[in-house]
Image 1 (cartoon, rainbow over the protein chains, first blue to last red):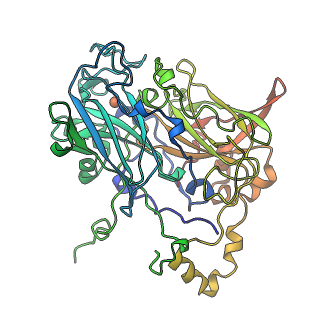
Image 2 (cartoon, rainbow over the protein chains, first blue to last red):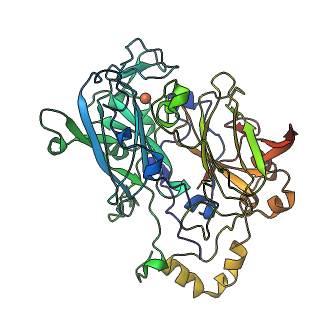
Image 3 (cartoon, each protein chain N blue to C red):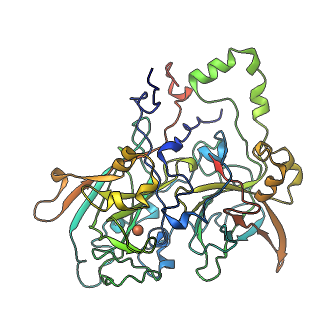
Length: 240
Length: 236
Ligand SMILES: [Fe+3]
């Protein structure tokens, strides 16, 4: 018996391929419609990762690239759960993040922004969700940075987030924004998302209860991956 | 009557998080060595098949080309494939794979030329779909004469293929496509996915060309994001 398929993706909450205000999309967007596939074995399976693939320090961006000191900037915790559309936790899945430093500069040979590189900050991390789908990172709040699109566009502070789920069709890359940032409504990349509520769900919420007193402030960010039809293996009459 | 928004009408479900572009610095997170620094003990995705995998050792190479005809030099591609027996390295795949076979890989393009490439084994034909493993849906089907016998029809094996997922700056949501093999013409002719593509000439955009270099098979697969011979992409 083939394992269950996933719910079709609701394309109305995702950005379309062609978004002219985000100029780079113009030449990189397919013009033909996507061909819709029912999930076969190729889509409903996906890679698995274990703790042997990563190190315990990998989710601590304050410590995972120290070269003689701590990185500069606002110390934050980003935490939350990876869930599916059925509101069930997605356990044991790989979450990877990357970001600019407190000044808005990436440690990347192609980034030439004039803000300085922080010698103690790499800007990437990864972790695996626990049995409840829970994850956390410790990091520095990234700075906003300018980019070439219109003459003077600025990205709101953001962290790039990559998640696997348990099937290749659940694969997702998105970005985390911070509650209250006035650059969010001005950003052509944020605004590729056509649904205001969907943008709000990409905005991490200040979570004073989860911070570490006199050390770090916290933001909560839940990630939702595609859900799946229930299966006969679960022996449930109400399977959908 | 006010039209009903399906999203408002499904309170028991959470909506999926919206996609955002991977951006120009995707390498920092997913391939930091390429960004120019060493941080992790182990980068992920460089060894797809492992040393124990059975089957023919192959190399796959190509370019991702944009709508102006230029190579895209900051793309990242992930690969998901079955082993030579047609099994995925996944608990629900219906069988075990060789020790060390992951079937998953991650490659980036050369920043100067846009060329990408990886080594793996050629996958075998993959079972597509059998009986739906969904309670009520399957029972509804089973109860109706129109559906009887269709399960067998759905179960035509898929021709050997690689599943690819492409992200980059300017790509707002990862693009899914498949790479098939030009030396599998008979299997390709009955492949249920290729046959789903109404425009027969577009099917050719998914078929890699086999050549031999230094005695080793190399498949060439150029992906065209837009323009003449735009690659077929899937909503999976
Ligand atoms: Fe960024």
